[in-house]
Length: 113
Image 1: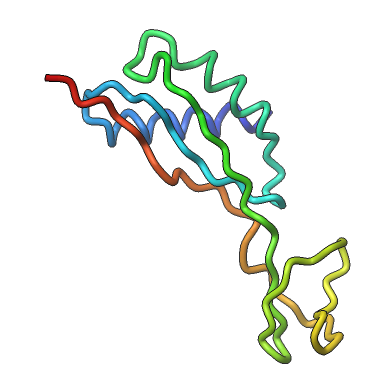
Image 2 (image 1 turned 90 degrees about the vertical axis):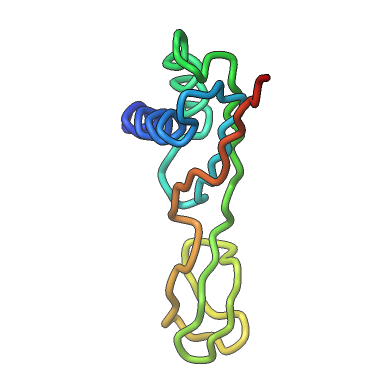
């Protein structure tokens, strides 16, 4: 259910940056480990854009892969399971460097004459 408040924020960001122009698409990056359900985002987005300058806009959701970095050897890798062992040196001292975020990446607006 937290997707509803997230979509409200995404819509607010799009409206603010569109500066009154009609928005045709909003692109967001959603981390694989963000605990956000993309289908819920799209559902709420479509339900909340009626009668705004976003009406008819599409929501493009790009999955951001989970990436980690080893603290021992600095190898970056995409973990294959929930236990993060460095594939280069076997260390468990790793840090997630991407895959938990949610970011508005682009807002497309229509420039009408």
